[in-house]
Image 1: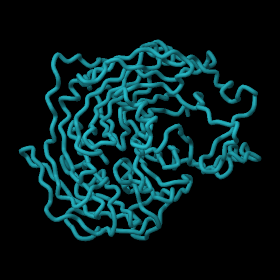
Image 2: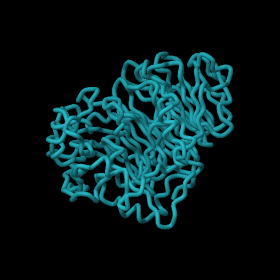
Image 3: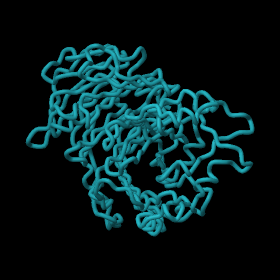
Image 4: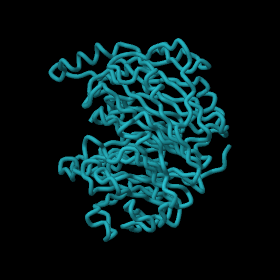
Amino acid sequence: MSAPKKGRGDGGKPMDVAEAPELELRLKADLEYEDEAEDEFEEEEIVAYGDESDDSDREAAAAPPPLDDDAAQANGDGAETRVWRAGVDQLAPDEELEFDPSAYDVMHSFHSDWPCLTFAIVPDQLGSGRTKAPFSAALVAGTQASQPSDNKLLVMKVSKLPRIRHERDDDDMDDDDDDDDDEAEEEPVMEHRAVRHEGTVNRLCLMPQQPAICATWSDTGKVHLWNLDAMYGSLGLGAPGAAAPQRAKPLPEVRPLFSFGGHSAEGFAVDFSKVEAGRLATGDCDSKICVWNASADGRWTVDEQPYTGHSSSVEDIRWSPVEATVFASCSADGTIGIWDVRKRTGSALSVKAHETDANVISWNGGVSYLLVSGADDGCFKIWDLRSFRAGSPVASFAWHKAPITSLEWNPNEHSSLAVSGADNQLTLWDMALEDDPEAQQAAVGRDDLADIPPQLYFVHQGQTNMKELHWHAQMPGMVLSTAEDGFHMFRPAN
């Protein structure tokens, strides 16, 4: 196993792949799809067109049977279901946590041959605002294998995914629900392509203006740029409702367009500008930041002089959603810096944001003066950049009981955000929510509802060692996450 390394709230511990043979054995079938409610229905066969060396038959689960929402509120003995608070409540020897399907509108899981520290969602041509089943999503992910030579860059497509069917009153049923039930009868499908990658993929991102261009941070200390267009095309991405065409011959070998070895250490921070096409920033564990620019002839140049100012590892970088020359960074030194590319030494603005390592940041795409940061102590804070110099957040939350590993503003609801932590919780928040007198009254005498912030509206669990999450911008409310035991794709019922 590779030596433990620090990165984005992992507490100095990588995902344990070599010391978990049961996980390794379960993942030997290259890519598998499974439904969270798999014990309630039979498994069906699924076909995934992968590399020629991979098996083509995969297992998938069909849609679960209808669920009675009222029955889901009690267990078999009629006892009341109570809220589980990770890090607070303890299970008795005869107790276990159970998945509650009534809390979800959509819930699916799938996994690859090795765990993935990072992934990005590939925009498609199926339209925005999609709320009806069956669902389809594509993503690029990078593996963390026990042997460096086994690592891959994966392009995955999951399609024909049903929603969870709940029993409803006749008055609540509408034509859309009927359509969903009819369409959900098809079997889910998962397809993928793979490219060999030198070393673990610490972090990756896609160029917003040209999503086939992918940047990957390797634990070898190099940053690579890839053109994944051929892999996208072979999966039929962008063709509404079309399955991937079967290939008559193997795809051509995909090699990096450009590789940069100028960083003095490996890193995790990487982000493309949404304003200036081809502009990229990368930060390493030696506190240095490099800015890349694409030239007219399709090549990239990296500034010879790095940006300096942090005193420890650069953990995350995010470009401004509205300004081409401005980006933000956070560091293990606890600071957040706001930089202008025209000034290389020292950030334009810097505050001591956290007393522990600042692991992740996210810049609000709809309200450009809002930034959120998450730290090793489990706290995340919201910052108003108009008063950033004062060093005081506009809000601070300490719900999570372990380091924050990922967070992201909702691209469709700008007051909402998702947060994941090393406590195996993924929480959804809405800053527009306030105390509700009726909810407060209902919580009287309920210890399990005590100290729950009004802004917290959903807690998702069921994954181990969560690493990264993303909202799917084209499917409102849909969240994807990666962890040691695979991927989840879900949408809350509320």
